[in-house]
Image 1: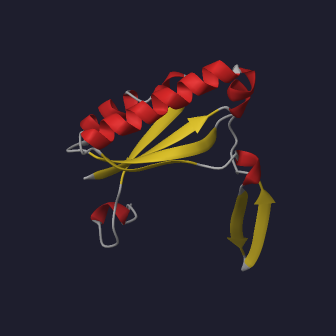
Image 2 (image 1 turned 90 degrees about the vertical axis):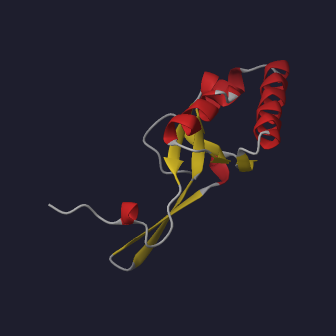
Image 3 (image 1 turned 120 degrees about the vertical axis):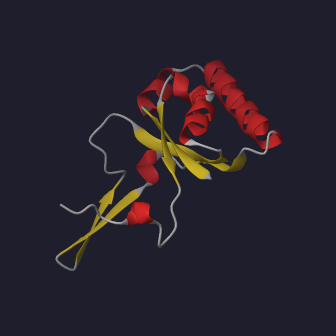
Length: 125
């Protein structure tokens, strides 16, 4: 089964890091991706452009509203993702916990669904 690991981080932490610390984190992240790849556990991993380059789109009453930047009410922003192959949520969480980004940010792990999947149905009652 595929799981997406959404990586959230407070951009201000990166601003306080030295160039050496950022380089170390990036090296560890590449090693993490390579390790998962060699184990056949990674489908795709990508960093995202900086949060200030984002646009958030909403449509309300048929009117489109566009806001600069991510729409988040937290200090953390979505900065990247890893799409992994795992046998269970427990394994996906274990793989996500190995990411160096989990040391200073957090990772949301969520199973991938497809149209027609009962998990996509709205709960009743």
